[in-house]
Amino acid sequence: MTRYEFSKLISPVTVVLLMILFAVRIFVSFLPRQYDIAYSKAVYKEYMKVLEGKTATEAAEYIEAEKAWLETALNADVTEDMTLQEQFAVTEDLSEAQRKTDAFQAVYEKYLYFCEQEEKGRHPVFFYDLDWLLYLDDDGPDWLLLLLLAGIIVPYFTNDCGKIHSMLFCTGYGRKKLITVKLAVAAAFGCLITILFNLSDACCFVVQSAPDYYNAPIYSMQTFQNCTWELSLTEYTMLKDTFHVLWSIAAILVSALLSIRYKNAAFAALLVVAVIFIPFLIGFMLPTAFRTLSIGGSLGGHTPLQVTQPLFAWSCLSYCLHIVLLWIGCIKSWCTRN
Amino acid sequence: MELRLENISKHYGSKRALQSVSLSVSEGIYALLGPNGAGKTTMMHLITDVLTPTGGRILYNSQPIETLGTSYREKIGFLPQEPGFYPHFSGEKMLRYFACLKGVSDEKTVCEALLHQTNLWDCRKRKVGGYSGGMKRRLGIAIALLGNPEILVLDEPTAGLDPKERIRFRNLIHQISKNRIVIYSTHIISDISSIADRIILLKNGMVECVKTPDELCSMLSGKVWEAIVPTEQSDTLLSHHCVTGFTTKGNRSCFRIISDQKPVPDATEVSANLEDVYLYYFGGDSHDAI
Image (cartoon, rainbow over all chains, first blue to last red; front, side, top):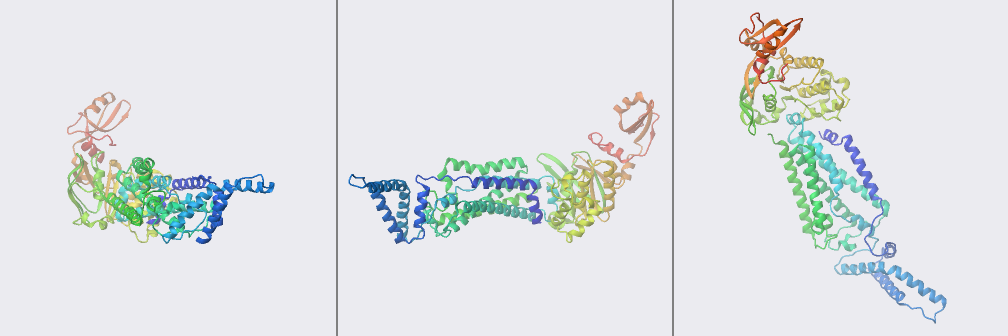
């Protein structure tokens, strides 16, 4: 039965829609990235390349030396008793120090943050993290993906609530078993598409940024200082993607429930869009409040909230509970005879 | 094999679709005859366990169908008025999908046999979206026949078919009616006149009578007349009597009239057919009669 349900779900229209969406996604992923920083990305990268792999002591020595050099270079004056060559060297150092000073400030802050972490018994590592930050930046689910999933799922369920419903309903397995298989297929489809979506994102990130340090602890980036879990970048990425999958399953089940309940594809689609966009609008108007719902919020990224492991566990439990309730709601709604 | 409806009622809000219907059917073809809105589809949905009755109960071999559950539904074959198949599925795939839903073992062999039986073998690979109305109906009957059901319920299966397809469909129903209960809803009398064992007349949600075609026709004995009158009297006859048909030849017209009394002095009594029966019972409120 599962095979046929997949065939019903993946109609030629669905395939075209998915291809368009993936093309748009990949195109957007390759657009130049916007970095919200006040210093030179190139200089920051230079510093990080130097600091990569250094022990805490080596890093401290380098940073202190660099700090001293910058202070000297920025405060040095050209005097008349200098030779022309000396004057040229001072000017050149000044210009180099001016180029580096803002980026160094960011590096220095990071160094101070690392010192704090070392005192807490944590061991952050230096690596070039700007591309990682953009990649891991998470404001919650991908609305375009959720809407596309809803667009596919609504007709998948409303079609079976239409003219063919009585034929399905009077078969031996046309009730609980059929709706369970349908929900499982829809959820599996949602998971698959979300994973493919995230994979395409990851591939674009790898191709564009050639990142390194996959196993570095997530708290090496100050943004994630509140994260109480000892997660590596890879583990955090997987957790983030898991949350996206949970969001997709929840959106699919909401779409399924409304489709079964209202039976009319256009009306159900309208309701689904409203239900999916209401959180988006709340998030747009109250970003801080909404971010507690996102993975970044749950794990302490991009939010002043001191989010800890129990809250994350609560979020996860809440999602799972909602999914189970929606699932039961769909089965009950499908099996209800008038 | 007995299906019994005991005091069945079905209400949709304040609308009473069926009222205290009691009926017992066993092997054979039962034609459910009635105008639009008489409650035919509701009755079929109740028999197929798609709807729950507001009152009363349905028994199959003396057991309530809600108790039998899946084991009852496995014995049902249902073809609704407009099946609404998946257009991107091929005929064969559609059939095999339903075989799966009905838990048919050896689905490949069963489906192949049904595709041959319903004359769909040559177009089994074609998308259902490209099927004609007749092909869709035949696919519907093939689906209904999956699992060799003991109860076959067909809701206006010939609506919208051309005469050739209708005759082909009628013959098919006749072939497959052995050893099962066939409930066939229609308001096209010619479809059932030759194949129905019994006719259930349904009017305003109530069963008027259940009789064989011959018994129904004999009930109209002395009420069906043929009269040949000058054409100029046609309007008078049409406005004052229930006319079931007429032909015109030159300046004279031949009328077939249902009337308790002789409509014109020269009228001759003729034997009734099912169209006359239909018009006698439903003439007042049916606009779909032939």
